[in-house]
Length: 527
Image (tube, rainbow, N blue to C red; front, side, top):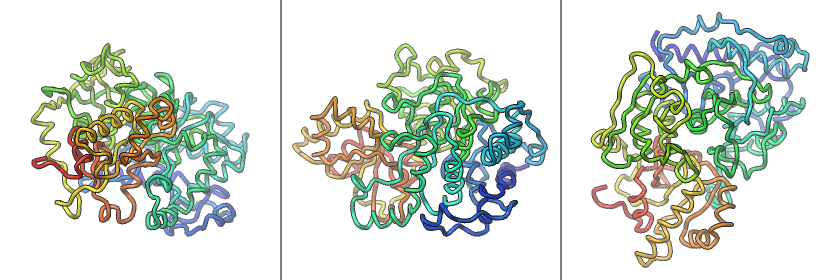
């Protein structure tokens, strides 16, 4: 069976399992819901057996889909971390997962109607992917349900009904950043109008999160594992995370065990405190099919090699060598974790990588070494020539290709404390050297509020200088900003984030070039 055919069947199967009767059902997927925020909470129940229009979305990790060749473009994969090119959907549908007496009692309605329906969805979900059992979750979940757009109405309604029934996450959980910031970024009438028209259900979604167990908005971030935010479960912990870059970092650097959950499936598992054990949650599902050898003559461009790896392995797991020299003693610290954050998020956005191993650095690799490689693994070498080939392949997607840049975007995934201070010093020192007080273009620094607050407390003078120079701290999502209606026609953006480049019209430049662009407002000749 061709990969593209399998994924189409998989999505159909996903829709079939979500036949939620009574209160958890939504209108047929043939028509998009047209609910106002006030209507959302009081829409009457519909007949049993209708397919909710959010069903297929629960199989997506982030926001993308399949390319013309049938391969995942970055976000729609199979949650397993390995290729399912030869899988058959009809065989998966015949699988039956074993339940404990406790789990069966929940399914039979002992703990209420809503919880029984959630368990039914989870069991069917596990059956599709061949899970043998459910496992208890630990740590804390992370959700990528962050966009209050109209097309999310039925999903938000389902979660609202769960909240009204008194269901909560088994632990307080973190959530991706909001898709906008009308205080520091889109603080103009045109952008604000587009935002309020495009995200009419944001308040309803935020209200759902509060009741299900999410903390306040200061903890919103795609980089939930940062010390300032604190969602970093112990190695080996089963968790339910969504957001491709967080899943990627969590599995790889923290050593947790989570699949690439789709929006909604993360919270469903959180409310039950259980997840089907398959894919990246199993020992066999964490084995590497690729040996990737980094042989650049100097420190690589982390986002570029991440893009190269993602394009090559797609959703398979790579075992990467040649990077341990950049982590003293093989330790990932607050001062260097941004390197793996940049590389990993690029593997997840240019491909669909949910886990990678770095020899001598990441937990699984330290424990098992090259025993993680499967028999007959493939080898991919990234040297200077290959790195340059990848950079040269990045297209210029600006409508006005020769135009001057109008804004810089730094922090996707969200900046660490170390990155904020580093960029503050680099830009202000470059401005001083050029005899300037203000950057030639606005610089948007994306970070959690918790990181911003720490930076203000410990480097108040530098943060004040950054603000005067035109560097704006914001806790929103840069990709959401770049996805606004008419963005590419209005903004010629530049970034050092390969993930942002993979998802938008914003052009990619390495740090040293980006600093020059910020100071001069021009792209250097020959770049």
